Image 1 (cartoon, rainbow, N blue to C red):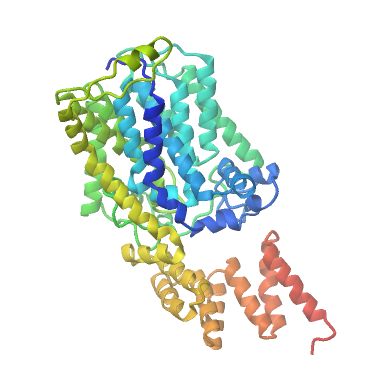
Image 2 (image 1 turned 180 degrees about the horizontal axis):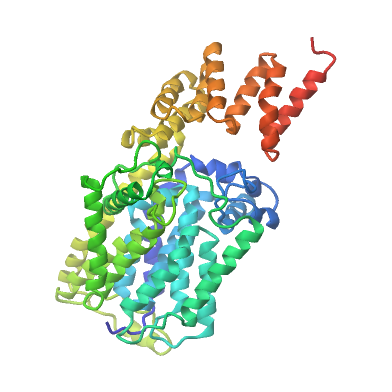
Length: 568
């Protein structure tokens, strides 16, 4: 594929940004839902003053080592801190970052392919995809958006593989890649993507050697980020907590992991292509491990996966843009496929933010293919420079109406369909109740969807209505502590004291290290005047978890009350 140097005009980039921003503009009406509260409103690093030690020494949720999930994303946490203390507008910032990421994709594609129309159309399609709702509207999805933006910045800065290597490009790409890793761990696959993209887009015999500085600098950047994380916080994966409730694959061997991964791939591609029946949760038992490869979802996923790999290999020279689209799906998917390691969650739509770019590239190439076979011209002008500015103003390309109709017929169903789906889905993120009411419709077997719906009702003062969802969550996953802890609160508020104590105790019995379960039982006992029992409940927990300030403060208060001379 012959490539000319291509630069995009400001108008073309503004079009990409506008499509991405307004395609998900309903985010402006969304609330702090689900994980947003833990990552922002309950995060001491975000809520306090700027503390670089805490920023790099805490996990994504503001917890020290051993007290939280253990995911480490300091640049995203810093962006939350800036929103809180400087700029405000959390959801508006997410939209701006998504628009900037879409623009970065357009710039990188234009530089590496030399095709401006293809680059702009692909970026516009990417910007409006309905599957992006969770990543753009949900605030914790900012990690995926920022990681993708930095990765594509690294791709742009690296320059084309057949260009002369320049230290400035190499250093810039390495720094951008380091930024991507500091936003989300899944960005680690970028060097593999760059290597494969170079092989696809480079003229025969012109691709860089694998031991070149182009790739070596990325490896060095990854090593530096991993070293920083290890010194400031903990080695990768070592501190990441996982549980069967969120990912049932934790209890499985390699066979079920492989079969389930194949099923998930087919499911993921289906949701990218047709983003309907979306859910904020897919945990136990919405998706269970597949014990056999001989079931339809696994076989379909395997066929699709093999087909995409074959497509990338076979079309490498004849249709390099389609091969690139396949690689852009496959490489980001690999790291979230449950095969290299088991993730904290079995599946989440925000994990598809990067792989979805491959679908956008495929749509853009199909549109370009139709345009190539339609009379007339419809090329987006490159950015003029120097003397070319005056010449460009005098001679604007004529556009054939037939060409415009062909262009619209190809792109309108995808663009308008995704715009409508994204707008409709955005309404679900108004609050926790609306979000998990919709989740229950899609994944009625999810214990967490029912639990979170019940929690939303309880927080709205609808204790009686919340009892049913909590009971359903505990039926689906009887070994999960949290629904019992919340059910105890709901029963207590409706006057069913004896039953509430049974569930408080059941929650602690199931998980003695569950902070909510221990705290709720201790508060219940203290309010009943049973201070010795409350202390006996709290003291072992606080001894095991000295950094849990809320529980420690309650224990001190109970001990003070026990020493009080006014106590009967």
